[in-house]
Image (cartoon, rainbow, N blue to C red; front, top):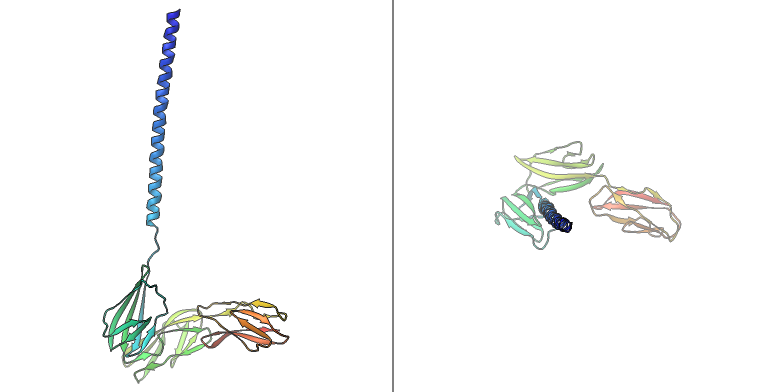
Length: 265
């Protein structure tokens, strides 16, 4: 009987150790599988993050200027921007301005923050007084040819956006187009953007000493605010302040041309 009990005890001990060994083995396999899965997941996310980047852009513009004339670049560049001119005898860039040196063609390349800006410069005898214009819907801007005389043929690449007659460009609807002028075989181009700026409100009633904020939408240009009667209301950055009882009209100006009006009572 004792021998049987002893045998059972030994067997139970063996079974216990075997179960323990199997459990440890399973735990190790489980840990290994978890580690492999975590490694795969982390690798996947690292790869994904590594592939996320801001897409670089390349902007190309065709500019025609006269000899000794300049073209002001509206784009603002950082202090690390690089500037390269393909032919310094034709055109150079200085302090944000492209200068035409002599008749011919050159390419100015600017690289900044991963982006590339290419200006294809033509220095010609004939050139337009403006290479780029913004005109309001229903308003006009006059283009003139400088440096050459002769018969001019004007045309618009999109008459639905803007039309041109004898150099007078008329905005038709919001959008972009190109106005062309052909003189003595030379084609000059002007990039046109048509906007429709509007005030957030056309008529406002405010009390003396109270203020109201007006906003302008539909334009990318700087807004210049004025009041036709400062004794009644004043305006600063769109903030209208009532001074005394009366009627007046405020204008939001664009390039010295009224675009919208708001009446105050």
